[in-house]
Image (cartoon, rainbow, N blue to C red; front, top):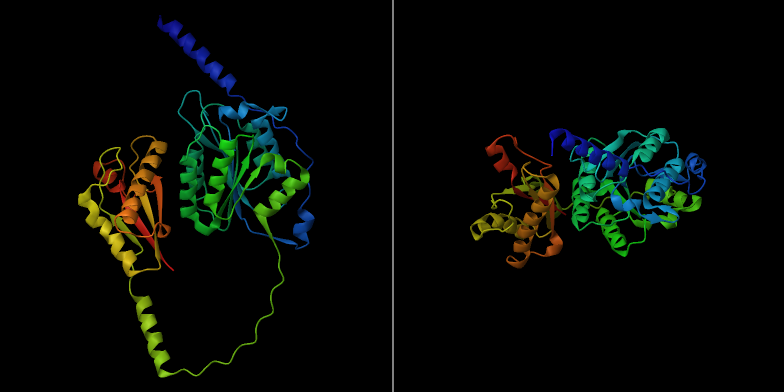
Length: 386
C-alpha cells in the first residue's frame, strides 16, 4: 500500500468516526414550570450554591428509547431542568464522557463552566453533547471533582446516564468525591433507559453521595415531575424558627468540676495526629502488601486502639505514569488491601474504616523525577475523632 493510499484510508476512517459520533437533538419533553414565585415568596431557601451536570455521551446512548434515542431523551430532561431552575446565583458546569476526539485519546471533557450559571450557557452545552465510544463514567466523576475545586457552599452533582457498559469504578469514583467534599456534596442520578444493571449501578453511585438520590428519567419527564426534582435538588422548605428557650440559671461551680474542666482542656490541647503516611511499597502494578510492612500498618492500629471513637479513611495514591483510570483502580485495590489487613488481622471494625483510591490526583511531589514519583506512590490514613 502506498503512503498516499494509506493517508486516504486514514482520512476516510476518521471522517466516518466523526460522522458516527453525532449530536442527538434533544426532544421537547414538557413545558417548563415556573418556580420563581415559590422562591420569591420565601417558601423555599437554596441549599445548593454550585452544581455540575454529567451527561452520558457514550455509544449506548444512541440506542432507541421512547420513540427517540436515550441521548435525545436525556438531553431533553437536562434541557427541561435547565428551564425550570429559578433565577438565582449559582456556579454551574457540564461535563460529558465517551470517545470525544477522532485524533486524541479524550474520554471526558467539560463543555461548560465552572462559571456563573445562565440558562443560555448550560443549554448550549447540553446541545453540544455527542454520542460515541465507551462509557468511562468514573473518569467524568474524577474530573468533576477537580472542576469543583475552588467552589464554596453546597454542591449538587446531577448525572444523566443509562448506566450501561460499566463496572464498579464509577461507584468508587463517587466514593472518592464524597470523601473529598464530605457533607458539601450530594449526588443525584437519573436513569435514561430501562436496563436493570444500569439502574443498580446508578442507585449505588447516588448512595455514595449520602444525601442525594436516584430517579428514573420517566418519573421526571413531566413539568410537575421535573419541578419536584429541581425543588429537592436545589432547595429546602423554610421552617419557622423555634422560640428561644429561657436561659437556665447556671449551677454553682464546684472544685471537682473545675478540675475536670482543666483536664478536658489539657487533653484537647494535646497535638493529635490527623494523617499518617504509611511507608508501604508495592511491586509495580500490584496491590499485595508484604508482611515486612505490617509494622507500618501497626501505626494505624495503635492510633485507633488509643482513640476508640476514631474513624479512618485509607487513601491510596499513585504517580502519574500510565492512564488515570488504571491508576485509580490500582490505588483503590491498594487501599482495600490495607483495610483488609486492619479488619482481618488486627480486628478493627470495618465500620470504622473506609478505603478510597485517588490515583494520581493528589501528588505531594514532582512526578517529573523518580524520587518524586516514589513519594507519590503512597498510602495514607486520615483520622476523624468524634
